[in-house]
Length: 307
Image 1 (cartoon, one colour):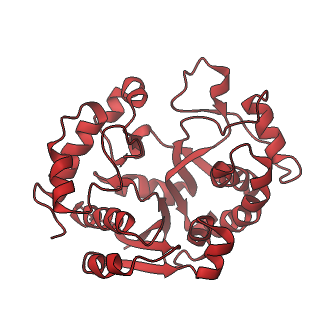
Image 2 (cartoon, rainbow, N blue to C red):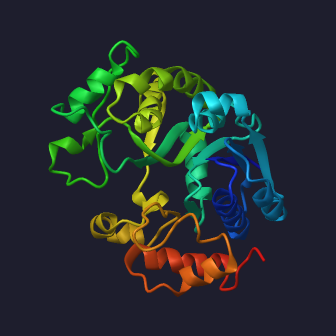
């Protein structure tokens, strides 16, 4: 049976432990007939020892890799983010990098089959282009970021998913939202090696260096000549009103929710306590957030699953 390894970078605090536990439980609740799924967490930062003791019983099926304090002090959150690419398990047929604030709610086996069959790196195109320096167009920004780092040309064959398609700023290379990215084993090592070399070099080139990871992946994929597949929004659907307006049909068939917006609830608290869980399930939500809420109740239950 082929294997998929879900890779999550996180901090060693209650919020992240609770999100990983929720994802792990959701994966176990999904129907798996052709694939074997496992979860790996890459942890760095100041440890909350009490939180770890509290959550370990709910993380028994999760493999942990711990970043050293020395490395974290030197690199910050990039230490655990880069560890995802450095320490991914060798026996998986597909590596699936996911943010902690994502939740799988429907079958993933079809897209996993496609990743193996085509050898393609797959994900949902990013919502917006990386923030360019003031006065620079997104396309010129890409040219400046790539100059001298890769020789391969960038193909602007895609469009940012939350910009009006008629807006010329929406044209983009294969630039993925990092929330959910599928990698076939056949290309992972080459792309990961290039990514790890490129990302630190991009930090000084970008107006907002926080996006250096997503940009580094775009450049690494282009340099490696890897095959790509832009997935429909259902595989990384955000709780965002623009997404609801632009992709109503995708909202009806969500496979993975990305609950990244915080206007109506705190994504870091939903799964931390029975009180917070009940409070979230009682919220009067609408749109994608209502769909997410209903999926949480359907998969994880009306009662708090981590008592």
